[in-house]
Image 1 (cartoon, rainbow, N blue to C red):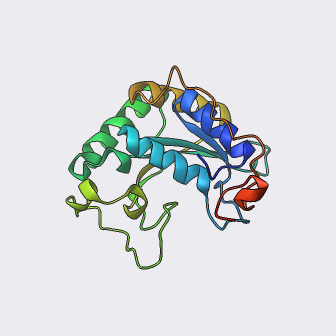
Image 2: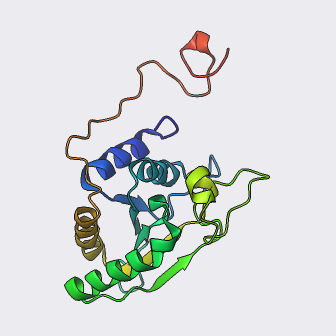
Length: 193
């Protein structure tokens, strides 16, 4: 998580312990024109071979209620033939346990994934590419639910237990002391000075 600022690093560590990520809005960082927290968490999920579970905390509605979005990205599983079956089973379990219908299940072209120029997002049916391509070049396959804030946390924890995404012994990631991003090595930062 070398690209994360202090708040994002704390959220990332919390997500490792809880099994799902909680972000404010879309987690887009305008300074970087990117969403490094989502990308880092999706990469971690890919490395572990587990779905990425994210609770997007959206702004309150006019009535004061929080209408948040719980998203489960199945693409880190890397078995495109199984996405539909796993998705249907997850939706059925949430429907049975919490009486909540999925609002959308789709394959987004691009989505929150990082895309470098010249690298095309692949079609979900191109399963050979799921074995060799990095996760940021693969399209997300997402299940989404509109939930209240409390409901989202409860269901996120439930899904984390089902998909076994909780790291019980997750240690805190630490940023090196005296390292200033964007500075040369002479001043204690990254890069070549």
